[in-house]
Length: 211
Image (cartoon, rainbow, N blue to C red):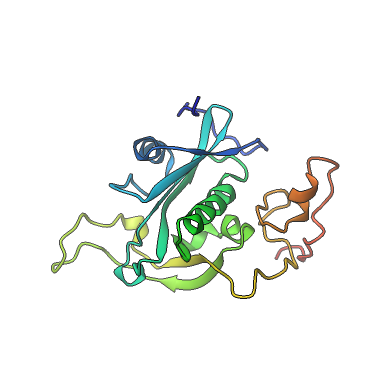
């Protein structure tokens, strides 16, 4: 039986999540109920979800890049990534989205975040920050469209996951924003079942206090 879109409370505790399939209609329903500023989408290439048992805890919608300059036939975009606050859900979704895109033959996956969102979930699975992009309203006199939400009219941060020539770089420091939230393929905490197993702190977390 596939997971159900069961309403649940906001929970940041550790949960056991699995990547599961989901339809666009189901994904849009989850986005409508949980996303802070984005609305449902009309179409997609594919969508994925993460679930705790029968409960969907997060979804991602992957489609063609919105900006025509990025729509080169080899690139997809995570148009929506939305969770109910479940720990590690965002990292799992971004990681699974890139694996699926690669399996379909795509060479790059991109997404945008707002400057205040940080990007820890993206860094945790090896995505790279390319810098600030865009800003403004999609509704222009030459191309009439529905007005862009006011919260989305400022500049955004562009992130990418792409094939690395010569293989992926070795992990040398903690890639997550917090111990236990990493989704990086080389994370020793994930490999050893930590910190749940013994409470061990990430050996790569060498940041100074306040960094």
